[in-house]
Length: 218
Image (tube, rainbow, N blue to C red; front, side):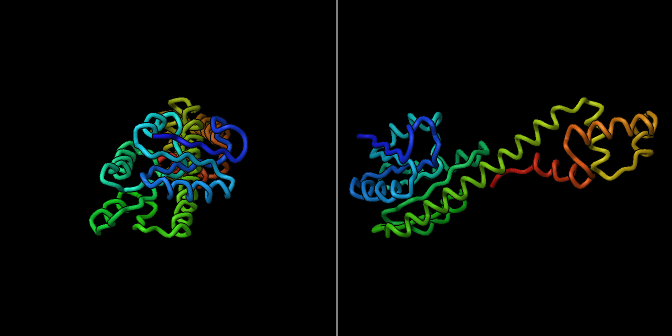
């Protein structure tokens, strides 16, 4: 039940490079895939048992996870389902001993990158890993945009948030002032502060900011 970690540059703890984890009972497949992934200057860790992988899961999420669906390894579907519930993301490539239609459909619906059947073509498997890394990068970028947009909105005062919402809905200053029971001049001041804090130059920018905050990385 060994764990092998290969690092292309620097230590694994620095997480400078995308990381791929492989869980499979087939030592030969793990060794071959490890060599291929390492040749792409990526970090790779191989596991023959689920326990050591799960022990590292919460603190060291991989960018892509290759999982063999053996008799004791329904872990892939479990992780995908849990990720969907929590809003997290797991780029998973499943390698099945007998990829029945039900398992394949279920896995793809839960967000698996691909489901490959044994004996697996290493070229196809490596291509699926690359797609998984790309999907993970897109998700992380989207998540960072959501976090940045949320942080900017949190800098607004309660009154500025009210003005922000009304301005973003397309209402003019005069109408906003009437709804909030204040003067149009005061609304102009609040509006200016909102635009400055959010780094916006138009109502379109405000709408995009709302879309970023409401976005759920898929």
